[in-house]
Every structure is written in C-alpha cells, then in structure tokens.
Length: 334
Image (cartoon, rainbow, N blue to C red; front, side):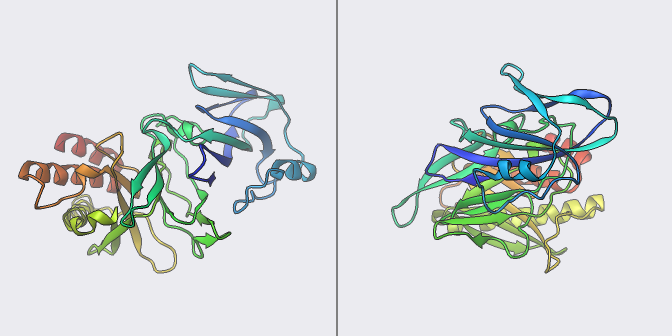
C-alpha cells in the first residue's frame, strides 16, 4: 500500500492465494468504495513476486509481458451486496491453486471505519495527520478487496509505504531490516506473515505517538502508545495489560503466540486513538482503544472510570490468547 496522508486516497496492490473447488468461471470478492484499475489471475507459482517496496504505475504491464495469465474477460460490481465478480475466459479446474493480483485505489474513509485519517496538534503546536483502521464487522473491504466474511480465515502480510513523520503498527512485528527509508519523505514498513485470522482482525495504525513499555513474566513485550501529552498516564494501562495477559496464559495453558524474529521476543501493541468508533477493538497483536478507555489520569479520572478502563483492557486482552472460550468470557466480563 502507498499511503500519502496529505492526499484523499491511497493506492494498493493485493495478491490473494486461493484454490478452485469445482469447475467454475467466477471469482467473487468483497470491496467497497474501491476502484480496481488492473486485475490478473495466475496459476500459483507461475508468476513473479510482487514488487512491494515500489508502487510502479506500469507494474502490471511489465508482469503481463513476462507471465501468461488466466484471462479475466469481465469484472462486475454489485453495490448493494458490495461484491465484485471476476469472470474468466475458461473454466477453472477443481483443486487448481490460483493467485489473484489486483491493483487499486481507494479513498480514506470519511467515517471511523475502514482506513481513516484524523488530525492532532503535537507538543510543537504542529498539526499532524495520522491514520488507523476499524474493520469490524465488514470494513476490511474498504482498505483492500478480500473475502470479508468472519468464517473465512487466512494469513496476511502487509507492506506499507508511508510518510516518514509517522511509523506503522500492524498485527505482526516488522521483518528484520524494516522500516527502511525510501526517500527523504517516504518510509516502507514490511510486517511478518500473520497467524490465521478473519479479515476484520487485520489492522494498521500510522501514528507519531510515544509509548510506555513493560515485559511480562513469559517475555511478552507490551507497548502502550498515546500522544506525548499522555506520556505520564500510561502506567495503569501497561500494568493491567501485563497482569491480564499473564493470567490468561496461566489459566488457559496457552502462550500468546506472536513471536518477533531475531531476539525471540513477542510483541503486543496497544494504541490509544482519540477518534475511534468502538470502545476498543481486539485486533490480533494490535489492540486499538478509544483514548477514554485506556488513559488513566489520577487527577481527573473517577474511580468508576478507572474500573471501566480496567474491565475494557481485560476484555480485549482475553481475546489474544484463546479465541473461542475467551471471547465468551470477555463478553460476560463487560
């Protein structure tokens, strides 16, 4: 993805690996407010790797000259169902492994869903544009074309080219050697392949926040991010998150699974956003909270609000260790 935050739209390249289960000429995906500018279908393993660090406007033309593709003869979109259908020239075969490659552009969401922008004033009185995501229940389709159904799980790998005055956080830690500076104004961040999960749990934040850090007994590095104005108000959230994650690991006998390459540590990032649709969101490895549900200022926060902050943190942390039973417990807690 290419994300200039001073523009009203972003660009993307997506590759979707799939398997045809029967003789069929249609591939159906979800999308909303996305303009697909090029589509190519390949038999998996016969195409060249996607160029992820540079978004070249002629990229697809160059690929087509080299690699034979399965011809897509028609693309149609149904706005009411938010479904895009690709029709192939010939039947796809059963058990045929395929890769669909799409080039697209899309606007930043004007609502607090999909990939949206917001602004803040930093300590130097500068206006900074940041961005974040909220995909639950069906807004992943606003950032990239996908199978946007919670029952359909996949692994994801995200590469983002972004303004150098912000840094990128996603579900997984970044690969070794990233982020990398591309130009004086642009940086590329490339993340590890995720665990299997639903599209609504994919997430991205482009922020310039500070963070408070702690390490749990099992070695999980927890970082809580917020604007510098809240630098002294993150200790409570950091402490509760560490204690709750340790409790869940011990109670359910399962370890938090995200592992960082190289130093063998695991990461959990928690971000406070002033403008956020939900109270909080349990994106795997990258929790996003409305600031009022995460920031504890003892000079202003009431006891009831402190209790609410603790309960919301516990709820969201519970989702991270064990998917199904912990979801039930988290719902009961709130």
